Image 1 (cartoon, rainbow, N blue to C red):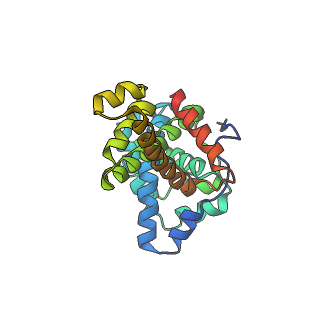
Image 2 (spheres, rainbow, N blue to C red):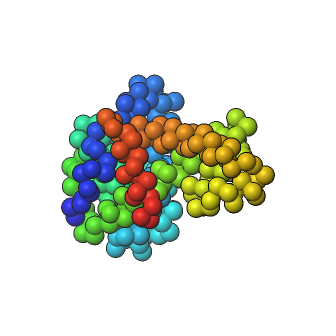
Image 3 (spheres, rainbow, N blue to C red):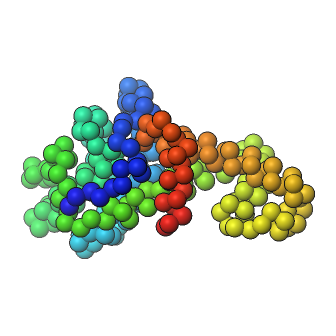
Length: 234
């Protein structure tokens, strides 16, 4: 399989956020693992459903088994740092090798890696014939946008800006006009536009934060436009 990822979508660089967390020890590593599980669970599920390995089990169970196995390895992210791969591709490759281990273990009736046969993702060689990476790109974009929406919504609620968030979601996510939304919410339309702009800034700040963990971009605004476009395509 050859990863057919458009070069302008997610630049191949390492994350300062991950580097900073790694030096914090176990607490920082838990932060990284939590982030990876939050952002990558759905893209991995999409990837799994695009392979010939669907017989291995329920997608969510397989993905959680992968996280439990690989994220527990002390050198998982250190090996990624020396690989030169995008984090997303490192995780996908590791998932491919994990699936191969599970298949071999299933045939032997043992746990993955129990007989000492562990496939090393540092070899960087993908192991699947299928190429669902376009779908993974879209799923990743949607996952990041959903997480940014979740964080921004919680931030607005915590700051007493729930009405601002309602206008933003109604207009930008659900496609309702300001006049309709503001009439429903009992707001002046001009005021509703300002409120939505405030909530939009919260959403953009959340996107910046999440992207900074996986990317090191000189033009984050351009990255956000590409990301939102990919999410809209889904």
